[in-house]
Length: 379
Image (cartoon, rainbow, N blue to C red; front, top):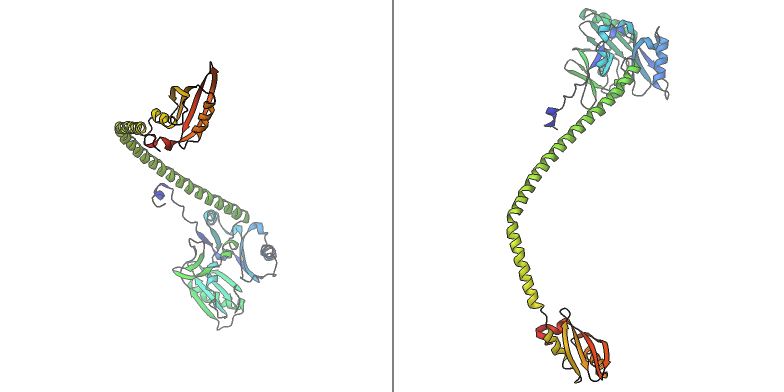
C-alpha cells in the first residue's frame, strides 16, 4: 500500500484528548453496591449531590477496579463558556483536569500507604489524597493560584482526607495530558514524564460530554471506520484491476507476436504436412495394397473340378467376391464349407444360387484373415 498511499487522502489525525479545567467540578468518592449496575448508581449519587438535574451537568466517573467505589465529578454546564467548549466536539475525550493524576497514586507499586499528589499549573493547583489500600482518592482539590497557594491547598487537603501530618506528598511538574497510542491504550503524562497507564474502562466513563452526543459520535466513528476500510478496499481493487489490465496488455502483445511467428512459419508447416501426408499414403499403398491374385491362390487349391470362376472383385483389403458356376450343385456347399476350414479364411459363404440347364450359378463371398495375406499370401 506504500505506493498507493500517494494517491489516497491522508489519514486524518487522531482526535485529541482534552482536559477541562478542574475548578469547575465538584468531586465525590461514592461507595457502590456490589452486583448492581454502575450507571444508575452514579446518576442517583449525582441527583443527591448536585442542585441541578443531570441534564444540566457535565459529569463523568472513574470506577475502582473491584467495583466497590467510583470517583464522581460534575459541573454546571453554564460554568463553561462557548469558547471553552468549542473544541470539545472534535475531541476523542473530554475529562476533568485532575484525572491524569490518578495514575500517580502513592503506593501503586504495591506498598499500601497514605499520601498525596500535588500539581502546580499555570493558573491552578490540583491536589489529591489517598488512604492506604484505596485505589481512588478520598479528597480532591482544585484551587486557582500558583506556587504561593500550594501550602494552603495541601493543608486543606490533609484536613479533608484526615491524613497524618507525616504522610508523603509527591509533587508533579509539567502540563497534564492524556495521550492515546495506535493500539488504543491511553497513558497519563505530566510534560515528558509518564505517570502511568490509564484503565481502558475510564476512557468512556470519564467523558463529561452529553451522553446522547457521545452515542451519536461512537456511531459516526464506526461508520467512518467502515467507510475508510471501504475506500481502501476500493483502491486495492482499482490497483488490482490496473495490474490485470497491464498484464492483459502484455499477454496480448505476446500473443500477437506468437501469432505473427506462426503465420510466418505457416507455409513451411503446410509443406511439411503435405510431405507427411504423401509419405503416409505411399506407405499405406505399399503395405496395404490389394492382393486379388494372392486371394485366388489361397482359395483355388480347395476348389472342386466342377467349379469354374467367371469373375472376381475385391471388396476392401481382405474380402473377395467371386461369380462362379458348378456342374455339380453339391460342390457349391461343400466348397464353401471347405474354405471355412482353411486357416487363412475368416469366413466363406455362397449366395444367389441359381440352377439352370444342369448348371448352378452362385456368388462366393470370402473374407481372409489379415495375417493370411502377409508376405504375399504365404502363411
